[in-house]
Image (cartoon, rainbow, N blue to C red; front, side):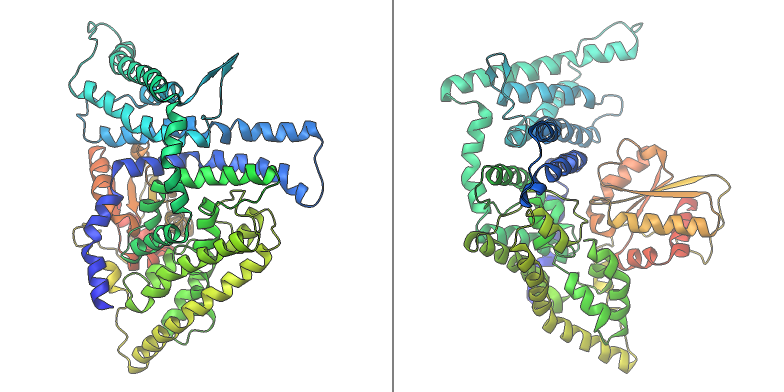
Length: 558
């Protein structure tokens, strides 16, 4: 076991390099930006379709209106994502461009939409086909979003532009500066789209779906599911946010499958596509990555160790809503050899059981997307359209997860009890702090920092905005308690780039520590203080509002 842990730790730099890849981050950031649209459209589908489960059908006029909201939101997802992905990639490229020679991200977004239409949308009599503007156009959207910013980069970096007299206002000059890369990008995709269709008889958008169909099928099999969800847990085990690395690579499959399932069910068929966002939210990650809900419950209610009991009771509420960083860093699970096997294997077995129910017991796979913070058993039942077998599967997964974790939990609990009894309780969370030596140590926190006379703003970042909200709320509570003029909010990493100067301090959650160099560079360039923390320190701060406030004040005063 120790050799396996050492091997995984040695690969951590490679994992972090993958995590920092600007193209994967662009997909993740683009998807995060579109989550409100996806949830909005799913709400209308739930209203439109769920009553039919109970043998009630809306009048045709009402049904048409409900589906219209879905078609004009989810049905345009490809266009929305090509713009948001291209913007995120442009922002990343701009960090390495001269400050006075930046790519216009708004122009890139507009051109990306045009290029996607040229590449994947076919003209029909009286207009254009909308088939590839939605989920079917996601793969084409990735191609466009990755290439258009680089076309702009080529021209902007070399200052190949239409130059106007100095007397011309900047905003007008910028319009002409964008004209050359804009024209080249549009021309490339216009010509390529025509030539490709003449050569293959297919639009590129339809062709690329056919090419990747075997990958979609393989990813939906037992081996593919094991690799995907096992990898997420493996990354998290070494302290790196696994979904941030894995999910961008399968986002297109997730979204395409959920839409395909919905269409199949509406046509009276059996939805069998397993790999979707709800599968990840409500099956593989019951209580967060590693399916930690039942482990946390055992810590909270049957642990004999004071350490585990305290951590479990403090973590049970957030873990119920799939925010499991408190138990991951607090137990800890990160780099804990005792908990390695259940943490990695439980998500895989959960998904395999779900697939068995779908393939062999006639249960429909997920057809609706719900917020990922929905408690997993509820999300599983609603997301499958109240499938009868879901009422069996949900408790079965809970029992199975408890059985998988229980022997390892007992071993670990006994180890901690022995240490506590002998009076030599060690710092069991020290390994969560390893490999963070390169991160600057935050300023020391005094017992009670002097309160500022002016308003201060703190931004806390993590992968999705969930873990970061715990520290942000702790800082806010501490400020309210001591009447300090300090405000704090949380966001997902990537959403902060345009608003850094609105804050006095930006704090990065520990699982995103690999992004700290980039964050520090952005913050230093704009005169904003930045910091990250160890897993142990972060969990402690979220539980003590006064210390959280002092932590922020010390960093801002340093």
